[in-house]
Image 1 (spheres, rainbow, N blue to C red):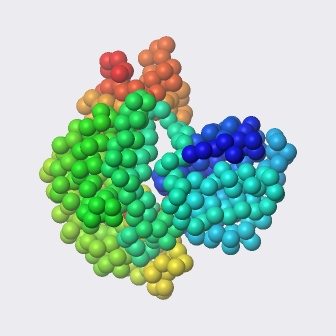
Image 2 (cartoon, rainbow, N blue to C red):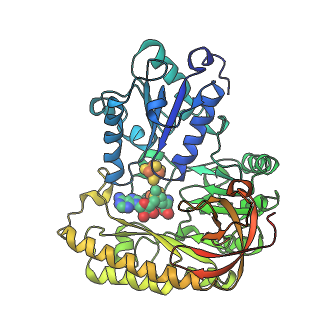
Image 3 (tube, rainbow, N blue to C red):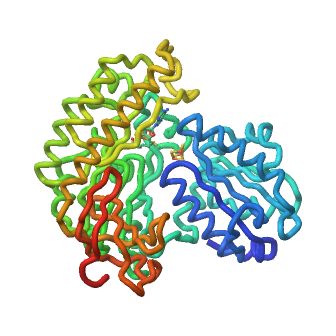
Length: 456
Ligand code: SAM
Ligand code: SF4
Ligand code: F3S
């Protein structure tokens, strides 16, 4: 991507990016940062020190929506920008959904760029600096693909690798297909080239990204090829492979085989269930039943014993009864999730579920949600006990937030692990290294133990 024309305007300007939402947005932010770096911009520590403030937005739930307005308003009271002029840019899913409509609600925003237009963000920001006007791009643009953009990675040892964008599933509650478009897979060669480059750059773990990675390749090759992709990524020499998200309806036996047989694929599967009631699953348009899901879990466990299963669950889908909810509780107990992201249903205008009236009082939904959280705490605690007195290889992320003498990292099953650092070792020295930890304690949300042996 050529940034020569942008440099005279943007070089030397400082930028700050705040990201909301999912890993897709995190990755898109890394591309925006990469582009600004390539234009000669410098990263600022906070919005006050930035000439360019970028918000990467999410609208999957209402709370995420509301946050943007607060953030934009708070920019009004910042001290003047270092260069004397500040440009505020809003990208991501709210930008894609609302486009020009956003300008009326957030009067200090200069640039709006949709999820398909991130490759244009540099020119839009440069124009805003030059003419002081407001600039928008939310059209889908094939000519300039985000994957050709420079890339500013947050960590040296891990990389997000989008293998596809968009979603074809139209779950009845979900806004994502409307703001991210239809599934579009990258070519297998492009993905493998990228992972090879990352391995050469010293990356040890990749997370393959898509809203439903199991259907990777269907749009491009006529049939899903995710199992093949996993095997090919496994041949690059990358040490750890993770992926998200995986839709139960499309998880093929060949993918479970690849997970079991490719040593670099980590023993962790995020398999969003959303509800344990077949009646609600049908209303959600998920295309599997409770029995289908439990059968899948059995097959995965048979091939990959001890695998960590995590999930997403929505409480309070319109019309969900106490009986439906109890089916979710019992499914969560049966599966024994290692972790779950739990959400209270949020009505999203434009989705089919938004038309369903629901008389259930909020307090009832909140009380169910709290019960679910307790069940997940129990299953997570029970799952972690399985690691007690074992030695787990931990990819070190840095020091724990509370104590800089304690390292924090991730086990193969994606559990957070803490261990005291040996005397004289700084956590920064070990970032990106893999170290064996003997697990002495297994808590609900983390394991802790003792470092055994040298990092590698
Ligand atoms: N494509 C992923 C999948 O199907 O597993 C999920 C992507 S979505 C960004 C993440 C999660 O947000 C979903 O799995 C769902 O649990 C939750 N979610 C989506 N729409 C929601 C809504 N309207 N209200 C509450 N939670 C919602
Ligand atoms: Fe949303 Fe369903 Fe697509 Fe996931 S699979 S992004 S929940 S529509
Ligand atoms: Fe949010 Fe968009 Fe991701 S709506 S969850 S940032 S795809």
